Image: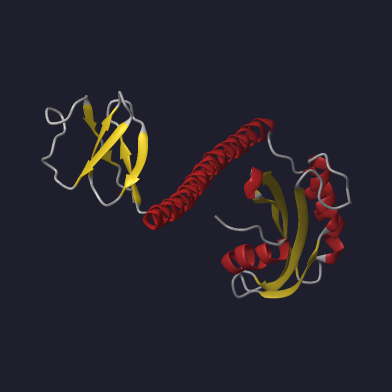
Length: 252
């Protein structure tokens, strides 16, 4: 993956450095005539900047060197950069870019300027074959679709992760609040010298003295009996039906 580059940078780094290394670069300049031609083929206004997320830019470089037979020559190297912005939802945007109209025009030294109109005419008549254009457009559309599907999957992963983090944070806060309430309630019972008991038959809870851990309830008369002897059982020793209560210990 490579971020979009300027047409001038592409000329210097990707064309001249690789295919004309060591040749004298006389100048590198914008090439508005080529840019207008490409924009016309794309259905864009000849000027006015980016349209529908599409940015275009053309440049040409003038070279001077000796050819393979030692004869001095001059050369124009041209390129058009097309950048398309691909919306990626909340994650911003991605970019698809490529170079077109890469051309090399060479003449004997001193004849380059005289043939400029011919070079521009040649550039204006070059068109891709319809079958190839249809195939390449299909490949690009398929890449866009896959990129958007990938972005949607990544966005869903991010959403699920964010929800999990929020759930965890809320759980920690809830536990802290619950612990704080339990601590306050425990302090209150300690001051009042009581603790909580539960009737196992009904689930009802009662606050009784914390001096004893053994308590019984006579449900008929509503009497409570407490003892420090865990083996003591009032049933059979006292009248009535007695139910042993359970101590409810605070949960951490």
